[in-house]
Image 1 (cartoon, rainbow, N blue to C red):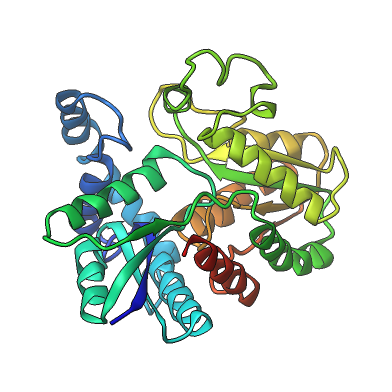
Image 2 (cartoon, rainbow, N blue to C red):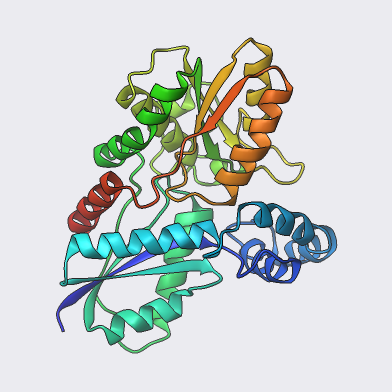
Length: 337
């Protein structure tokens, strides 16, 4: 007894790159009211009539392109990171990985931590920037699972680490060798997008976010876009990138409603059309390589850039289990304790 359980939380992944498994994953993921933030009935109708009949096959083909012999890249990297972090923290900590949707599940991971004699819990949402659709729903799901039991242990939560110096230094350590080899004319920081309505919904004033071009310079506490801007600026400084040689954009939009801009696919084509021949892309919203980095950026964005006049394109790997990230993550856990 007396050990601290560290629960790493990520979004999730299908169990296999096949339509059936992808459909099951998407039903859980997009059925979450914090992800697809519509009233229950419209959300169900949209899922069952417009998304699930078509998207699982398309997504399964994309997953198949990046699937490894060990399984989903997100799960493979997540397990490697959990092992490395456990070794770094030592025997007084027990580290487990859980997915908000899919396997390994939150209930299973909590049971493992209880069986290992953990009487304190640190939740570590693996999302540098806060969003209700990622950090918010993952933390809420853990509290719901704990509430179903009798005893609830003392709990700490690692806060958003979008501007954590150790994390930015780790991202820079991963990226510098790539930039030295490629010598890009431009560096793009591509973050996962969100619908504009979710950004506005997180604004307690209702009168600040997205109301002016410089709103992110005076951020509200839990503004995802402002935190993404801060990460991009901090990482550009850590890499000594001059103004005009870097920009940020947002990827992975879904549906017809407005999402936060600029859009990554549009920005990639603009950069190629403007004469940029060598482009490097970071994905600082992801700590582990996954479908959104390897397929959406590493394959589709690359093809788009080359098709519009670019000559060299390189996706910078995510943090994965890089030693600098393991060290920074250990510091985040210790501070949360």
